[in-house]
Every structure is written in structure tokens, then in C-alpha cells.
Length: 304
Ligand code: CP
Ligand code: NVA
Image 1 (cartoon, protein in one colour):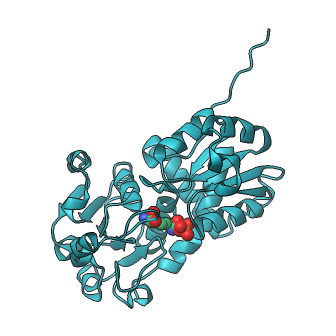
Image 2: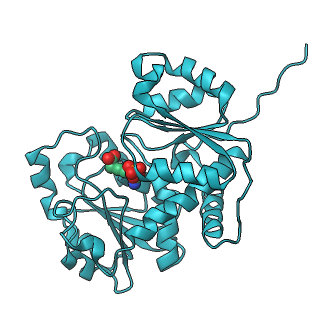
Image 3: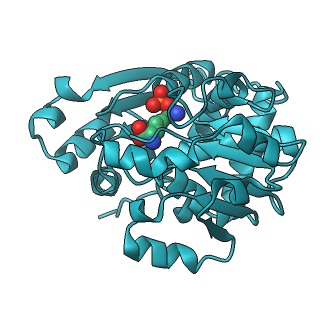
């Protein structure tokens, strides 16, 4: 009997599962898609991308959809609640069935465990489209946007102000792969004790009590919503986060040639002052656009 040799499947699950070389390749290819140096047209003709979203999305969903079309492929959108996955069919059965129809899956779910389970049973690549722990696709676009404005990220300083959440956790992972300093200005009470212990061991992370001290001399200031999807809005948390709101003052403390980024959606008057998105240092629309270029490079890396 001839044994079928299973090809190694290239999942894009978390940055800490990737090599620096692969990530650099994805970022550089994204830049080349944007500049039109690589057209990508017809690269993945006859391939189909399946999008499974358990949570709302504008940017991730639309950018992946358009990216796949621009690469010549097809897209099928699986609204979680309208599939049997949403009413209890197991993840492993779903993964095995979908692998017979489609070539690559983007999965946005609350639980990292479910993402890894889908990848375990899938015969096609699975991409993490955000979960409660991490958001690696966002990071590729963020690093690309940083480098377009400031130059190669190694040796630079990025400051995160606000909630210690999924996007922030992917920044922590990125700082352990690329050699830049990540200043964290987050209320300590919002960080799990074991996680805090692990973070403090990382050589590129600096933890601050004061947002002003953290932003001093930074190349980039970043933040995100105080209440991620699925989290309960609480006044107690809001109060803890108030001193870490990104304001005009914080942006003026950063380096003269620095930028402000936010993965969006934003809540004006909460994690950011009312006019911060329109601040001259804000590059948020480029950051959002770059999701499209980077999704193409991620799809290409997985499918190659
Ligand atoms: N930044 C981001 O992932 O946005 P969406 O939730 O709209 O996909
Ligand atoms: N931290 C946010 C990111 C949204 C893209 C959330 O999970 O809701």
C-alpha cells in the first residue's frame, strides 16, 4: 500500500509560532503588493477562502475577502450562527468537512483553544482572525505601517497605553521576535499575575505606571478599546484606565517624528481624546488600508 505523505500545513496562528524570517518575508511582500511591485493577480486562481466569524468584524473580514479576490481566488463566508458549528457540531468534524471544500480558513473566535483545535483537525491552513488572546494579522499591518513612517522597527520604541488585551499581547510577542522596545503603560490590576511574571522576564518589555513616562521619547504610541468584544463594560475598569487615555499631551511627549496607531474600531473620548484620530501624527487610515496588503501576503505565505 502506498502511504499518503501529508504535506506540512502552514497555519498562521500566532506570532510566537512563526520565525522572524517568515514574518519579515510577509511584511516585505505586503510592502511590495502596496507599491505595485508584485501584482498578485491570479496567484491563487481556483483557490477558495472560507471566513468563519463568531464575532463582528469590518476590517479583517472585508480586507481578507477583497485580498482573496485580488489574488484571483474565491471566498465563502460562513456566518457562525448559520452553520452547524454555531449549534454544536464539533470543531473537529467541521474542520474535516471544510477541508474537503475549501483551501484556506480565517477563523475569528473568542477562544484560542477553539482556534488551535480547528487547526489541529484541518487539512488546510487556518489563519487566526482574532481571538480573546491575540490578533496577529493586525500586528503585521501595524509593523508595516510603523516601518512606512519611521523605518525598520528594530531598535525603535513603541508605547502601548491602555488595556492589556489581544492586540497588546500580539505586540508583546512581536517584541520578542523583532528587536524593539515595547513600553507598556497599562493598569497592573488588569494583567493576570502569572502573565505579568512572564512578561517582566522579556528583555524588550518595559512596564510603566505613568503614561507620560512611557510615551517620553517613543517612536509610536498605540492604544485600543478599553472593552474588547464580548467583555462586560464596567465603571471600575473605566476608572483604572482613565489615566492611560491617549491625549494630545501624550502625543507631544513622544518624539517629534513619531506616529499614533489604533487598530480600530475607536471610541472617541474613551481610550483616546476626542480629536486624536485626526491628529497630524495619526496614521490610522494607512494602518487600516495596510490590512488589505498584509492579508494578501499572509494568504500567500500560507498557500505557498
Ligand atoms: N482591527 C480589526 O481587526 O477590526 P475589525 O474588528 O473590524 O476586523
Ligand atoms: N481588542 C479589540 C480589537 C478589535 C479589532 C477586540 O477584541 O474587540
